[in-house]
Image (cartoon, rainbow, N blue to C red; front, side, top):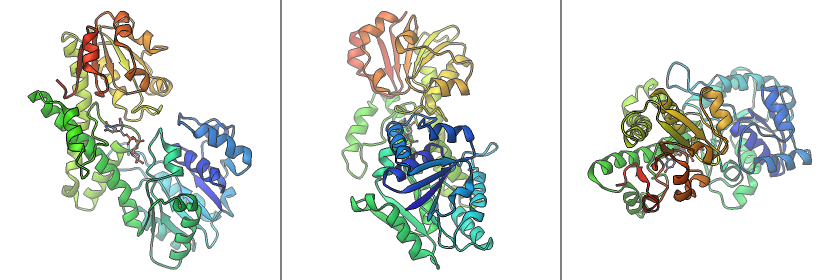
Length: 437
Ligand code: UDX
């Protein structure tokens, strides 16, 4: 099929390359000329495993092109909207002006039977408003909503073989045509058995919001349990294992630690709360305020623990911060707990040296005073204490004996509960984690 993708960030760039990889002819548009040039040369402006490979092969096949010229989308049958919906500067609400701008830019280039497919995460009600906008502008193109559930670090896999596909289309003239077009563009995944949920626009928007709210709640639930476990001498990891064997609960997303971050979960729960308030239903999702508060409290807990474990005085304390990305296999530092811990310790007066295998450039752009090391050994050298905040395999596999030889004092805070306490203690370390004795 001939498809266009509007917006070439994490979502759009991966979606465009994946669609071309599946055999479609793709034109991908972004307003940022630098980003378009980098992607056209096969260089993604962010770290995402597997993306350079499908980008290069799709560009070479001639099926994928990047442009800043929106008029080149004319002739595509499907137009995917994949622009960002960041948190507003002055509230928790989502800023959807890039979605509106994408629709405005598309309008003059739409054919009568085209299908506009929203993938961005938007407040419920947005799609209906956009459908009305198309109509009032005289376009007979159909609007569909097809939310994206990709995880950074697994974005290519999640796009090519998703857990499920959600197709939201309003009843009306273009309904059957839009569903058929969506089924065709995703034919490979559907024939491999991917379940499809066909629904209305509002449900499709809400599925995404609800999924992220549920995942965030699961993480904050276990982090709340870790606070209780810590005060009572219980072990939160064993607790998670034990409740996780109940298939109704499940073990995934029950890892206690410094909490969730990134470009989605934090902003999506805030946007959901803001939208519910607008609908007069703030109390229905008031618990999400608590989910956010528990999550942010984890960062403070880790900062306080590092200072306490090192004797109680942060001033001139040499701290090695292991990790800056919000999770491993990513260079994303948006709302990163790791970066907040590094910053919080520095603000408290500590001499912080941080290292991350991928996220040092992005971290320094957000926090220019951040002191970074060239490798993990350099970060650890002469440190009074180390704190593991992003569970990169390179950190999880560290040998405590080698680490101990580098540091001034053998102290480590494991803020992701991923190290073996017995092994670190046997090497002479003062080891502590969150919610484990
Ligand atoms: C998330 C959703 O998973 C994805 O479906 C959606 O499309 C976008 O948002 P992503 O932001 O890439 O994806 O990260 P994810 O893997 O979900 O992790 C989110 C955060 O939760 C990370 O900071 C991670 O460290 C943290 N986390 C995850 C925990 O603290 N504990 C866990 O058990 C799991």
